Length: 511
Image 1 (cartoon, rainbow, N blue to C red):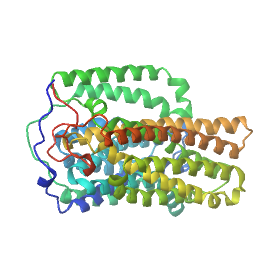
Image 2: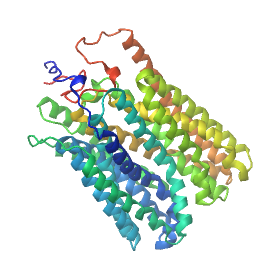
Image 3: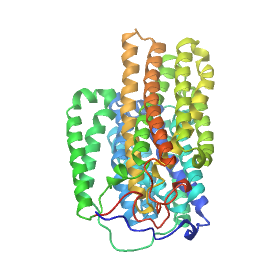
Image 4: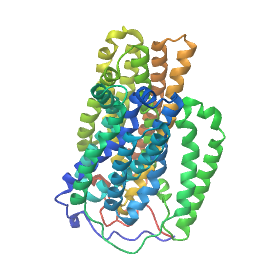
C-alpha cells in the first residue's frame, strides 16, 4: 500500500456559503419531522386500534415497521448522497416522506397504514444521513461544532418531544381520528421545507458517474433486517419466534465486512469503507459510544408512557408533559455543547454521561417512592438533570466521531453512525421494555417496581457508554502528550473537521 495523497486544499481556501445557516435550519426542520415520527406514534396506538379496529399486534407494526425501514435505508442512502449529490437525495427523500405521510393519514385499513409507514420510514432513513453530510460540506472549524450542536439538539428533543406533540394532537382532534393528524401535520411543514431546501441547498458539482456497491448494499440490508426484525417485534414475541434470524444476521454482517475489504483491495468504491473504523481517528469509539448510549436512551420513552398512562392513569398529554424537562434540558445543553466541543473534546461526553446516569437513577428512585399524583412533577428536576447530560453527549459525540471523515464520505459515514444508533435503539427498546413487563408480571402488577427495574437497565447501559468515553478520553490525552507521534503533515483536528478537498480519511491509505 502507498501513503495517502497529500491534501489538495487548506482551511483558508474554504469559501463559506452565505446561506449555510438558513440551509441548516431547513434541513434540521425536516430531520426533526422524521425523527419525531419514531416516537410520536407510540401515544396514538390505542387511538389507531380503535379507529381501524385492529389488534395490538397490528398497531405495533405501525411503530416497528417505521423503525425497521428507517434503519435499512441509512447506509445505502448515505452512499447515494455522497455519489449523486446530497441536495438531490435530500429533496427526493423529503418529497417521498411528505407523500407517504399523507398516505398514512388517509389510510382506511391497518394493512395500508402499515405499508405506508414502511415506505415513510424508508424515506426518513434516506433523508437522515444527508443532514450530517450537508453539515460536513457546508461548515468548517468551530462553526461545524456549532452546527452539530444544533443537530444534536434536534436529535435529542425530537425523541423526547414525540409523546408531547402526539398527546397535544390527540387532545386537539379527538380520540377516534386524532391519530390521522399525527401524519397530516407533516404535509404542510414538509411542502414548505421542500420549497426552501430547493432554493437554499447548494448544488453538487457534476462529475463522472460513480460506482455503487449494490452487492454490499444487499448484504448490509439483509444483515440489518435480520438483526432488527426480531427486536422491533419484541413486544409481540418476535424474539422468541424469530431468534433464528440473529445468527443469519451475524453471518451476513461478516460477509459484508469481507466484501467491503475486497472492494477496497481492488480499488473500487465500497458502500462503507472499513478503514473509517480501523484507521480513522475517533470514528470507532464514537460509533460504539453512540450505539451503547442509544441502547439505554431510546427504550426509556416507551416505559415512561406505559408507567404514566397505564400505571398512574395519566392522559397521553399529561404523560408527555411529564417528560418535558428532559427534552428542554437536552435541547439547551446540546446547543451549548456545540460551542464547547472544540475546547473540551471528549471530556464533554464523559461529563454528560455522568449527569445522565445520576439523573436517570434519581428519576427511578423518585418514581418508586413518591405518590402517583405528584410523580410527574417530582421527577422533573431529575429528568432535567438527565436531559442536560444528554445534550452534552449526543452533539459532541457526533462532532468528534465525524470530524476526521472526509467530506466525500460524510454521507456513508453518518449513515453508518446512525445505523448503529438505530440498532442500539431497537435493542434498548426490546430490553428495557422487556424488563419493565417482566418485573411487572413478577411483582404482582407493581408499576413502581417495574419502572425502577427498567430505568436501572438504562443506568447500566449509560455507565457502559461512560466507560467507552473514559477510555477514549485517555487515548485522546495520550495523543495530546505525543504518545504515538502523529504525522507532521496531518491536519490539526482541533479545527473540527477535514477540509472540503480531503480525498481520504486521516490515517487512511490507498492500495
